[in-house]
Image (cartoon, rainbow, N blue to C red; front, side):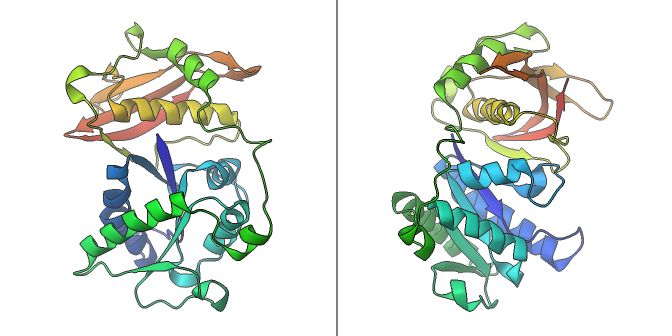
Length: 275
């Protein structure tokens, strides 16, 4: 699984900023990168507190790709692209057509997106830019002169021992199951949507618990596992799947349960609970 982390202005519901951010995400970024087998994550999918929360910092460092929306000159976005530039990992800059960029990033390659009558062109351009960024990362002044490494502090996103631990603790409400690829799906994948309200605050959870959730979502997307029917609330008619409590590398990971619905080729993660 590859993870794409989207940063940029989001704004409050009903604002022009929020409308732009959602349109860019749903009309360009997801249609462009999900066919390339990226799970697209935006910051408002996760509840967080603080100046730059732990999980946001980890995604900035560990995601396979970052797409940075520089529209409106959002200060947080520029702070975050500075981190990504410093570590020299793949990043693509995008911006709303008509906006002006500050001089210190104006000379860096940026995709200017015009949704009206240009959406398909933007989708194609982002695919090319993403593939180029992955093949040739770190083409920024700071990363060419200096290299900041987090490798000693941050392991690979899904190390083998974590994947093995995951296989032994995945459950449905019907009891433990063994992940088995669904034969008739082949390489066909589900697209994943994560409801903004799905995640609780993970301040008290170890980061490896978030890794477990992402790994669980990847298995759902690939069709290698499926949950069991769940009717935990009158208005919810979907499925649940999760993990039993486990200790990984000496860290206690609590039981995690993911509730989701399925429509055609799209899985919508509605809620995540921990015990």
